[in-house]
Image 1 (cartoon, rainbow, N blue to C red):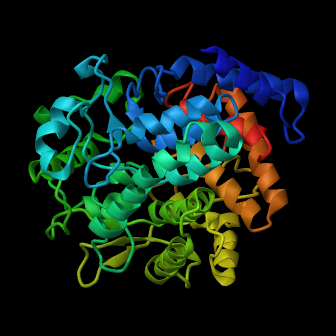
Image 2 (tube, one colour):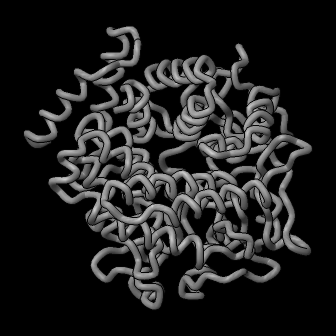
Image 3 (cartoon, rainbow, N blue to C red):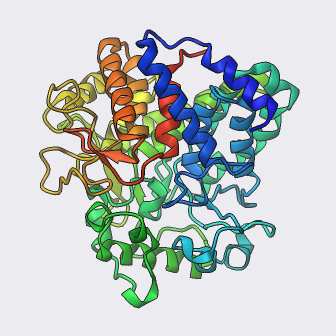
Amino acid sequence: MDRTTRATGADARRSSDAGAPSSGRHVLRERATAVLDTNWTGASTVPSRTLYPHQWSWDSAFIAVGLRHVSPLRAQLELETLFAAQWGDGRVPHIVFNPSVPRDAYFPSPDFWRSTTAGRAAGAPHTVQTSGIVQPPVHALAAWLVHRADPGLSRSRAFLSRLYPRLAAWHRYLLHRRDLGGGGLAAVIHPWEQGMDNSPCWDAPLSRITPAPASAFRRADLDHGAPADRPTHLDYGRYVRLATDYRDNRYADHLPGDDGFAVEDPSFNALLIASEHALAHIATELGAPTTARHARAERLTAALVDRLWDPTTGMFFCRDLRAPGPGSLIPEYGVTGLIPLILPTLPHHVTTALLSTARGPRFGLGSPTVRLVPSYDLTGPSFDPHRYWRGPAWFNTNWLVERGLRLHGEQTEADRLRTAMLDTALETDFAEYVDPYTGQGRGARAFSWSAALTLDLLHAEP
């Protein structure tokens, strides 16, 4: 770590702990910082040294949010490194591959995606290899928070002025190339794009996909994770089939056939809207017009409510664009449907109903028996407290719910959730995800976004 990083980290460690007991929180802060130091490659941060040895898109955004408290410079570099791999059409790939990592360390590898050849028409970069799909657009929100951590450093490096056009191009790609349903929302064409890979929300649309044969891939994830915690072989075969078809079509975006996958997702679009609001703040900082961005965020919020809100259940659901007719809502209660709480102009009646759903038996927010908000309906037939996104609680989604609670004035509930997240992080050595009831750690340990978001929870907002 360089002198600038050490000095900035020392300054950060002197900042407010937001009322946490000093001894335990000091240990937690030091351990979280150590995780990010260990996983730092010199230009970006890997999610995990074992399971995820490259740079991941939305991981880097969440990591930057925490890194701003340790070193605003590293936080800026995290996002700059990611956007250096942006494609000509504006997309930000979900993986940027490290050429020094062996090809068989992760699947799908660069040889599978073939970005420099199959992605040439879409403007894939020639100097770095990437995947061809995307992940949730939380980057503008992260960039704005990173700027606020040290505005002087940000301005001296022209951080926002250099990143702003890239962020704007990224949003244009999603709003135009990915509006596959014609209703103003961005669609995902693969479960990996939404980030909650094997959520039961995808079971219905995935059931139409013929899986790739087992001989077509080797799952490197099982070298580091228990099979009972990971997606099934059937699901993985379907993921490979979707990615193969997209690659072979040279990463062209269009509504797939009846047997394809195209879904409008609440959290993906809520993060896009939150980042549109952040882009408006960035534009103000740069002296650029902001009216259009505020108006776009309002239109997207209205479209989100119009297309994905179900007033009879008090929940946002995913919309399957390949279902008969104009597409249909998928009645599965995933944590994705709670993430719109981060939106400042969500209608009051929607917010009230959504909070009621979060506090109900499906998610158990505030319940003495539920430690963290699960990734899927606690009462659902597909609930599994250990299998990836089919029930375990994740730090990034709980961090988003915590922000949403504070935004809408639910301070007591936010404080309780925050304390539970900090305690769980310390007890599990920053696990990738945890049992929502017991807090038992699952998946990888020393997971970067778990450590980074812990740091963010430990510090007061600038």
